[in-house]
Length: 227
Image (cartoon, rainbow, N blue to C red; front, side, top):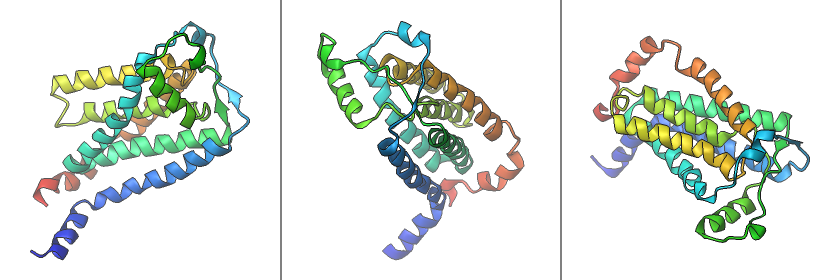
């Protein structure tokens, strides 16, 4: 088989990856909002004042990027049906979040002054860079929390992963830590996380509760490893 046929074979085998082009739309939309939202409603709860600032939570906060990427990548190669489900969950939910940000511009005023914190370390240094590139707008619901829950659900519902206890436990713990990181780093109000949880419940009901078994049969028969 020559190189041209190999490339054609790979493109056909992984053609379901075309759905990932959504990220182009998402990034353009999100970047536009980040750069143009100047006036916004403050999202705040008195509970936010009771939550301390803990910079070490920058670790799970950053791990979010790898968590979402690796989860989507795993299902991209492992199972088309699981891949389509997690993409539906993430993409529809993220679109809803962006729509809320567009219709009801919102933000928060919870960030700490790192210069007057009285301590400096690698964690505060990393967070200061995040503060510089990430505005305190577009916070409700929290996409950080929402996507983490979506990845956890996808892993929990996966036939290939649901019985691997260490994967299930580590995923659950990481999701909790990522969610907590958003409030301990003062990146989000607790209301943002609660909004993400409500949206996750609604999307779970829409994406995972319906019986898609009949629709999945032809897809499951077309295992990527057998193409």
